Structure formats: C-alpha cells, structure tokens
Image 1 (cartoon, helix red, strand yellow):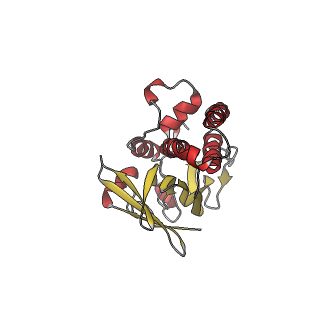
Image 2: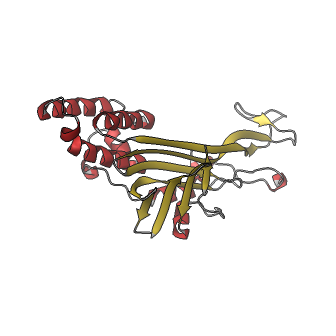
Image 3: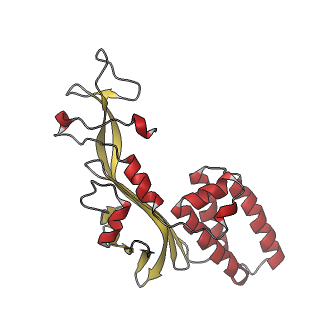
Length: 247
C-alpha cells in the first residue's frame, strides 16, 4: 500500500479500535535490524538472494544452513562429500526458483536444514484478535469493495491484531520473525538469529543494546525484551513488545 494513500484517524470512533497508519514507522523500525546472510549481500544475483538479504528471518535461516551444511558430512554419512555438494547445488537451484516468494524461500530452507542436520524444532504461535481499520466515509451510503458499512455509519475493514511468532531452530540457533499489531494500531516487528542459552534463545542487537529472551512456557512463547528493544516498534507502542504469545 502506498504510504501517501493511507487513511488517518477519525476521532469519532474512540470507542472502537482505530487503525492510525504507522506503516512508515514500522518499516523504519524493521530497517534498523541488522541483517547478515552467509554470502556477500553486496553482489546478489537474483530476486531470491535479494529477499534473503532484506529479511532478518531469511538471513538467519541462511546462516543456520551454512552451519548445518558445514557439519553435514559427519551427519549424512550415507553419501559421499561430492554427492552432498551436488545435492546442495541442486537445492540452491530449487531455492532460487522461489524468486521473491518469502513463504517458498522459508519452506525451502526449513526442509533442507531438517534433511542435513539433527535436533530441528519449529516454533509457531499467535494471539490474534479482531480490530478495525477506518477506511473513510461512504459515498452515497456505499463503501468500496472489501469494505463494510459499520453500524455507526462509516466504512471499515477488519484486520487481525495481536502478536504472531514463527521460529525454526537447529543446533542451538533460532531463526525467528515476530510481528505485533496493538489495539491502538501500533506495530512492532523484529526478526533475526537468536542463540541458545540455557532454556532460552537470546537475540542480541549490539547497535541498539537490545536483547530479547525467547523461551517456551506452559501457556505459550514467552518474550522478555529489554526496554531498548522498543526501537523495533512504532511511536505509539506504549507497551512495547508483547511478552506472552499464546498457542
């Protein structure tokens, strides 16, 4: 969506959840996250590599892949080293066929890492509720396609709100993506590579002195961020990163 076309807030809807566009703030926050794939991102040659270098979760998966492939000869003992190399070259061709499809790239990495490593684990959780996006006043009582005329007489769209988390861990490393839409429309987004530490994974951004501890609790995934991690949130993110994401 073009930022210049995003709607503003309507003060008449105070009793409802209003979406004041903070896409720009969210993008700025996301851009602050340091990304580091296992290859030189300054000389990418295709759309798949561009996506890997642009998204923290995919960059982290690429680092996990590099580590898993380095150790693969000791794990995949039923094929020769040359056969393993050939299989990896074929996998890269398959991965690159995803073009800029993030979901396809993610699945390609997860499947391949699981093939050549041990102890892989997937973590997924979400805690979504319903929120409203104010779209504008109806024209002649009619809203545009994909909009609904609310019972208070204005056009709205429904959107998921709450927190979502996706992570894939192998050999003590966790590639993760966290996204949150708050009840007042603020957004938080963080993704990258976390390292195993005791019963948790720790994500560290030394540039902003941010640390996020990620652990599994009885109720869901528990995120324990330092205050500095609010840099990944929009300017109205009063509560910062959501602490508990229910399964």
